[in-house]
Amino acid sequence: MHKAKAIMVQGTGSHVGKSILTAALCRILKQDGYKVAPFKSQNMALNSYVTADGLEMGRAQVVQAEAAGIAPRVEMNPILLKANSDTGCQVILKGKVHGNMSAVEYHRFKDTAWSVVTECYDRLAQEFDVIVIEGAGSPVEVNLKDRDIVNMRVATMANAPVLLAADIDRGGVFASLVGTMELLEPEERRLVAGFVINKFRGDKTLLQPGLDFLREKTGVPAIGVVPYLRDIHVQEEDGVALDRPRTVASSAGEGEPIKVYVLRLPHISNFTDFDAFRHDPMVELRFAGPDDDLSEAHAVIIPGSKNTIDDLMFLKKTGVAADLKRYWKKGGTIVGICGGYQIMGRVVRDPHEVESKGGAEEGLGLLDTETVLEREKITRQAEAVTLDSETGWPATTLKGYEIHMGRTTRGASARPFLTIVKRGDEPTDVEDGAISADNRCWGTYLHGIFDNDTFRHAFLKRISGASFDRSAGYEALKEKGLDDLARSVRENLDIDLIKGLLSSHGSR
Image (cartoon, rainbow, N blue to C red; front, side, top):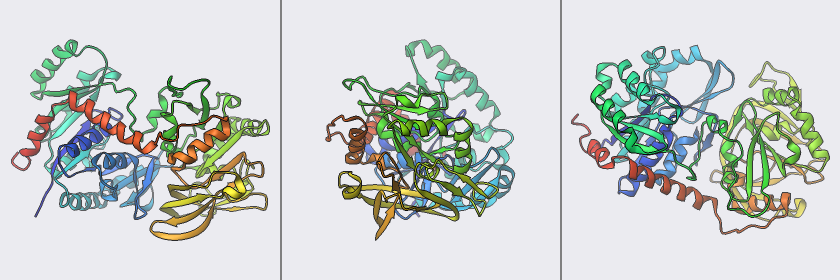
C-alpha cells in the first residue's frame, strides 16, 4: 500500500511561525514536483473555512493547501476547536459540530479524537507523495503531554522527522530550544532532525556562536535562519496578528488613505475577511478598540463573532454601541458580517442556549432584523449576486461561504442585500442580508465578500469617491505572496537536507 513520506514542523511555543513555515514547505515541495498536502491533527482557532463539500476546517490549513496547489479538504484538519468561553470550546470533528466541551471534558475525549486523527492522516497518506505536518503550541507542555494528539505522538505515528522552530524576535531563543530538548523523552529527541530559527533581524554572522552552541549542547544542527519577513502577503489565522500595529497602510497610495475600521470584538472570528484591505495601497485598515475615534473612519465593520451576545453586551458596556449610533447619524457607513450582521439588528435571541444561558439581547437597531440562534450550524460555500436595481451596487457575482448558527428575518423597512444563487453545487434563489433605507447600513452572512475585487472596489469607491485599478486582483496577490514566501524560505533553509530526510523516510 502506498504511504506518503512525511516531515513535521513543531515549535518551542505558540506563534513561533509553524503555520507559515509549513505553508512555505508545501509551496517549495510543490514547485519541486512533489504531490504534497498539509496536515494538522488539532487546531484551535476562530478563523475557519468551509470546504466544497460543506465541511468546516481551520484557515491555516486552507492557506497551506493553496500553497500546495490543491483544494482544501477536512482531512487536513480533522479536529478544530473554537473557543467560546475561557474554559470551553466548540469541538468540530471532521468538519461537523460534535458539541461544546469544557477543557476537562475534551481531555477525556481524546481517545476518540485520536482515532479520527489516524483515520484522516491515513487517507491523505494513501493519496500524496509527501505530508507536511504542523504541530501545535509546544511538544513539552508537561500537564498535557500524556494526552498528546498533535505533536510527538503524531510524529511517531507518521514516522516524521521533526523540524523544531523557535522565534528569535521574542528573545530567549537558545534557552527555548535547549529547554524543549531537555523536556522531551529520549525517543522523542531522536525525532528532532534540525532547528529552525525564525523571524531573525540583523547580521547572521553574529548568530554563529549560538548555532555552534546548539549543535554542541544538543547534537542537533540548525538547518536554517529565516529572516523576519515583511511585505509578504500570506493570510494569518491567529488572533495574535491583531496584537501587532493595528494600522496597516502602504506608502504606494496617493493622497489620503481610505480608512476602514474593523471592531476588535472579544470573540472576533474570521478576521481574514478583511485581509484584502490589509494590502491595498489605498486603504488604512485598523482593528479598532473602545478607545479609537470612529469618526475618523470612512466605514466601520462589525466582524464575525463566536459569541454574538457576549460581544453585543461588550459593545454596550464599553460605549462603542453608542459611538456607532452617533457615527451613523453623522453620515457614516456601518457594515456587519455574520455575527456583526446579527448585532446590527433589533434583537438576538438564544432560546436553545447555543451561546448563553438563554434569553435575548437587544441589538443596535441599525437594521430592521431579528436573529434567533439555532442548534444546527450552516456551513456551505455560496455564490451570490448583488441586487443592484434596488441598492445601487454594481451587478456582479460574488463567491464566499456561510458559517452561522443564526437565522435572521427582516422587517418591513429592511431590503435584502444579496440573492444567494448557489449553495455548494445546488442552484438556489434565497435572499441574504439586509440593507437600510439610506443604504449606509448593511449586513450579510457571506464570508469572504471583500475578496471579490469588483465588489471591494465598488465598496471603497462608495465610501470615499476614489477610483481603482481593477486589474489588481486579490487572488493574484495571494499567489505572489506564497511564491515570495517560498523563495525567502528556500534561500534560508537547507532544502537539500529536508529532501534527504524525506528520502530516508521509513528507514530511520
